[in-house]
Image (cartoon, rainbow, N blue to C red; front, side, top):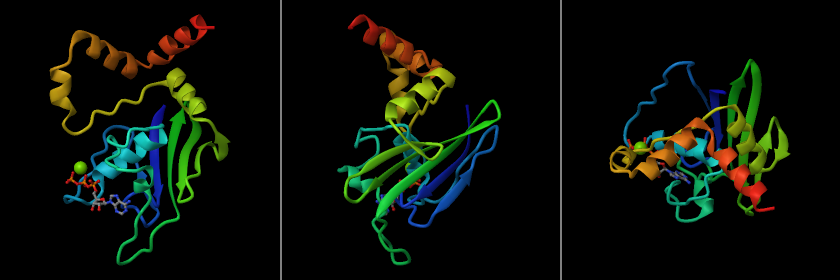
Length: 169
Ligand code: ATP
Ligand code: MG
């Protein structure tokens, strides 16, 4: 699975619909303080089901919806769409939250459950995000914590969870 593009509409500082192409190798996003670099990373985490408000630097779930600026009025919903390439097949994974609190996930435009999205990734590759300030934490991790990190990155956590689920039945 290769991330090809991020599309943001009404997510955090992205009041203006924005497409961010991702190069096949390394993409660096540069910009002044407060220009939205971290918001882009959080947008990826959000589509992939991030629940932790702390990780999204939000005090409530609605904080991800663009609050408005001098140029643009506040958005009625936050929408982020990630385009992935998997063996030359395109997958569009999206999440939308509106101001009434309706939260929807999509796979290729069809409503989906978060579980369907995690299953897709668990089986097809890895998504690993090491955030600002996390390097110290990794260096200080216990062997067990490091093992968990590698399992997440290798995409095997899903099988451990499936095993637990099967054994509990
Ligand atoms: P730094 O270089 O300091 O790490 P950055 O480029 O990572 O900065 P971000 O932290 O991504 O910047 O962006 C912060 C900006 O996003 C702030 O100006 C903040 O007001 C704005 N912002 C966050 N949430 C919203 C929202 N819901 N509506 C409008 N703007 C928002
Ligand atoms: Mg930042």
